[in-house]
Amino acid sequence: EAFYHYADLISNELEELSQQLDSQSTDEEKSDQNELLRQNGNPVLIICSGPEERAPAPYYAGGKMRRIDREQWWEKYDGDALCCFGHYWRLFPQPASTPQELKEIRLTGRDLFHPVEAQALLGPKKTAMCLDFAVGLRYEERGFKLPAGGLGTHLAALRLPEKNLYLEDGQILETK
Image (cartoon, rainbow, N blue to C red; front, side, top):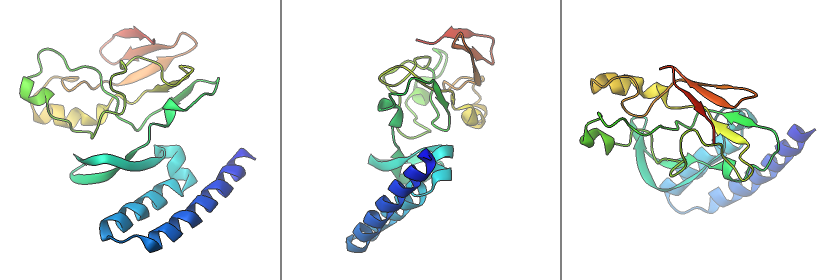
């Protein structure tokens, strides 16, 4: 029932956005609106990769310049149930051994979690947790000849009910 309610809300929003799109003046704005409609108007994409919004500034990620960014929906999540999610490439601090010039490179777009610690629970009730620690960037670490985790990446699992993070290098971290 909640899904159908959400689908109706999306349908109404799509209609409004479509009307706005017709009145947009630039090709760039129309392109952004089309991208937002494609993502935010598709319940499957919302569930798999979350809602999106216009980025505060264009950024480079995934081999191209982008103007659309993931929405920080967890900042408004006030549910009592723990909500674990991925697809947002949260990072741990880079090790001291990482060269300074590489520490300044941002390979994933803006940091949606800064200044919150990587093992911190999120949201007003601390009931959301991103478990995606950018392990997909390991190819970049290899390209820069860095050890695994050199850019702040980790493969992690959350153990319940303790809410401890288990990292691939054997570290066990308590969530905060």
